[in-house]
Length: 438
Image 1 (cartoon, rainbow, N blue to C red):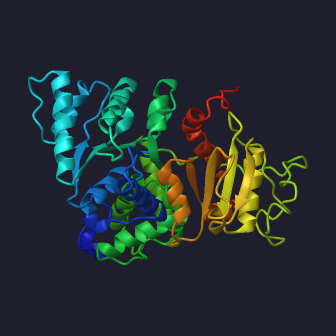
Image 2 (cartoon, helix red, strand yellow):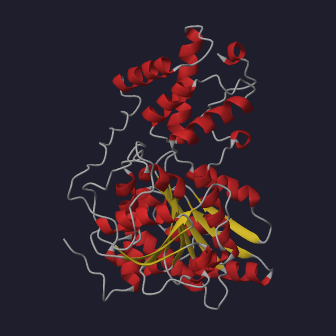
Image 3 (tube, rainbow, N blue to C red):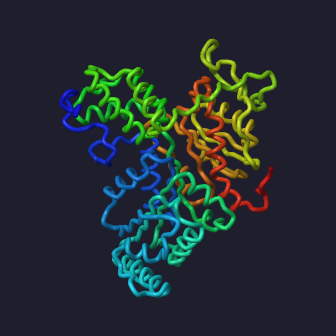
């Protein structure tokens, strides 16, 4: 329709998965690295979560394309509450016969298959997509399948992919044993404004069009109305091109994007734009920086947020002891201030390289403030993740810097939500210390 007018070889914003248009942000590359790390280091359970449309299924498809022949892969995508006999779906995923077999016979068939693959030098991996739809009882059945791993080698690995509801289910008391077996856990968040702009330009260029067809202001509007969700970004951009073609617009500007978004919102076909989060308060009694930590922010006078301190935000339901690692002292101090305002205590603070000399001690989790894009995750952090010695939470230092400058007022609440997502695992490790509080 609009392809020839704008000089495209094909539609740049199709909602159908297309490897040719694949664009991985830093978040997606880190999620992929976590998946590959879990497979290479024989993680029993790996959990990847994210909101609808953040690219979880695309991530799995890309992973499947990269896997070598040393893995036998089974994929379950048709998940729902009434999925029925789980073992039938598991056997079907691996191309095994399940008809007229009792539960015991099906379990034995899977065991025989896994052992046979292992004897041939191959490990078996079961991937369950949309796992948030599984009932608690079904998730417990999956945990029981891991008992096949009787020896030191993980002959069966399980990857769960789902929406945030999956993480909520895994927090339930009856799934404590399941949470204890999760070795790798990563949550995909929506794209920020810069990532949204780069995604739009990438897809325009791949389709043969001008990468600057959407103005910078239009890209910002797309981010505002889509919330940074890739699926909604594609939908809104595609509609904007249709409108632009109808009006014979040479470029797509912010006014056009706004018109499209508001018309679709009025018709109920597009979600309302996320409400703007008010800027953090600057009360005189706001939480001061940590004792001995110096000023909470090394920001020049006159810069946005130069004199801001964290206002009232979400707090953790239980106190946590956090080991904090990052290479920029100003960012570490800012994180310490936010953590302590949320009810956590920072028991250790070090640079990334300093983790070798100062491994986390007496901490419930390790918070790693990852440096600029392209920096490798330190080997010490990967070792800690592989050993399961301590839960590890990654934080994007670019977002920390924006929060420090007063340009990301929702950062503190997002940080608390990330920390809270690890509570089930932390409680399972230290049941004597972490009990629910009001």
